[in-house]
Image (cartoon, rainbow, N blue to C red; front, side, top):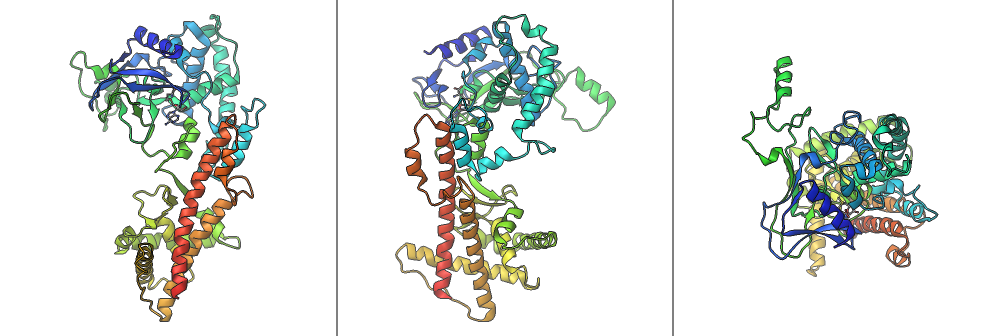
Length: 527
Ligand SMILES: C[S@@+](CC[C@H](N)C(=O)[O-])C[C@H]1O[C@@H](n2cnc3c(N)ncnc32)[C@H](O)[C@@H]1O
């Protein structure tokens, strides 16, 4: 057993963290750290595999500066506060209650793209990787302003460290300077703490908020997990009580509104009041790795930015555009405010027709349009290169926006029905059935509908080509990236990661463009 695992297990024993004897924490060469495996027996669903006493988690409520570090419930603010809590425990060294836990953490920061431009250590890997990441979904997340003032996440972390964390730690230096372990304050240690929080913390309940949960954070991620963390979020935010407490009464005295009331006092020894638990949600075969999920819908772009890794295959991946980006990429001239407003108005109208007509069933039968349940990532293509119905609708609007509004519903249904015929015909061609006939209405109205469909197909192809051209290193759209990646030495892991992300996105774009190109070819052959 590795030293790192031993240290963690000793800490668990000393802090009453209980591990089921059917599991073991082991060193993992693949993920360069630790992971959790089943031993030689099958573990049934709904088995509690780890019990972590609530007071053993490291949070702003339990750390040595509890009551001093600002309590922020979620978001970047919560991550920054927890990073200070972890940082002060790192500074306290052996005097910290979490010393063993902290020593068992990876000795290097999680390799988040956020730090790629600064953690260079003389290597150009980070900068090279960032140049390949350009224009990808991961790059969008990385560049998204983290606050209303437009600052990037890294700027926000730096500002927070200098304005809040460092002064606070200096003001309370008595808590950590009395110990021998600390090497003084350093921004790079705060970066380390932040990366650990980003890649390992759990939002546990309304009292602790975001917390480091020893052992729960030893499980690696897959989408279809076999364990999850069980915690009751709705505890008293003042004292963490699971049941009615003195703070409820205070609250109710002041305001008799609709509270999420907690039940009256516990039957003694209720474990949910004492522990957070890792529980199996599926049967776990013997001798296999046990996985948690960090989020069932996380894309590779999100995984890379928050955790520093990606999955080889990720069905959650998608590429998205804002409406402004679509308009900009598809217009040869600048788009005026009024133009945008008109498109938006028409888009809403057509979307409403879509929802209340037969169009939904036509759309759901398509192989190259998919129906999105929610409005998230509205204008997007999914991991199979299939266009969202909202993107299709927007392109329909762009193609028909100069036409009068009357007859819009009939036209929408007719264009979709035409697309269905072409898709069927192409599918038959692929099955070597020679391709079915598409009955074309050769009246002006019929030909206009064909033109709209051809237009939509052309716009999808343009969006894909432009996206490809604007991603990765400039001028790299024609390169064989897989071949290029084979030649990159293993000492450049970030470049490998960024190239994998780019290869994944380009293959989505290629398959989307190919599908719509063959639709366009089918239309051109007939029309
Ligand atoms: C919560 S920790 C999981 C335990 C971690 N392996 C360790 O050594 O402590 C999250 C980190 O584990 C690694 N990880 C988790 N799932 C992974 C996966 N499916 N593939 C590669 N690395 C993974 C990543 O480095 C991530 O930042």
